[in-house]
Length: 132
Length: 277
Picture 1 (spheres, one colour):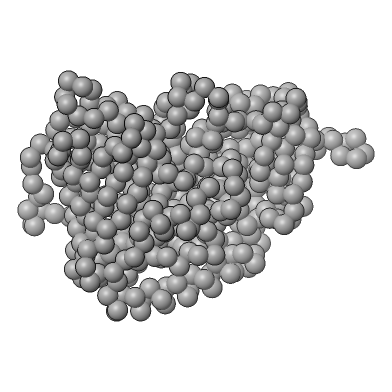
Picture 2 (picture 1 turned 90 degrees about the vertical axis):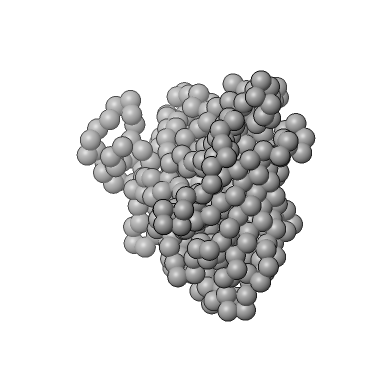
């Protein structure tokens, strides 16, 4: 997916005073200039409105395990992009690319992710048209 | 879904989305503003007085956007998903289903907004019995396989009222949010919806607003049928407390672990008390 307009929701939010276009939440707490790759183990995949979260256990350089909260878009949007509640399960080993938080909280905005063997997580099935 | 062949109505079953707004997992979309404008044929025939008001709004919005981008303003967030009509048809990221029956066609959006289009020959209510809503009052009829809809009495959704009236916004790029125009309560909408191939619907909309426009404004939007899902997924914008504003900035507060809910327990990521579900 192109990143051309990945700040669309932020933009819509700023238009609230003048427009009817609603949005979820601002993404300004994420540092759009930084990209971080996290490799870890899924603790929980919280499929909930308004935003879905991946809780990821990641070991730091000292070997300490930290829990990261990775925010995604809504279940409705994720389903259309190929994700479902069962896409990730606790214990899954994944690599997740994020924009980290500005304030050093261990969290970030989901950008992309791959499973243990490299395939994209959540990609729509090749058998498009059969539904699920 | 769909009326089936016995009724003679077209099969519009499945989930539909505006072409170009397939969401990305990070919250973005793949449609550029240029594409939006080309598709919409964006050229609202604003009267000069309206244009002057729009220019002021645009200037204020640009200032606010700059503050958001520089972090001095957390930006807005809402607690409802209502787009209202006509935005829900023109530039919404929400998918929808269409239930076509001989007497009524219903458009059901993932935000639970619903458009009722009565096709049983009734007219709009009389003037004394009309009242404005975010979706207006719609009646329609079939011309072959084309659904023709007439909509009146549209007002801005709750929470979005402003002195300019109902807004139509073209969005697609963060720097070009100035593309907005306003409709008066007198606006009338005529839509012609039809299949242009087996997986695409097209809505040709004409907005007639003698108060704000110098002439009717004709727009077009195309919708594609989702191919890899076959059920609606509920969209809910509520949950502001998932992203609390701390020191003027949004931060994270993911939902609590439902497997082991601990009311009042501190959230691991933010240190906040877990919000109620």
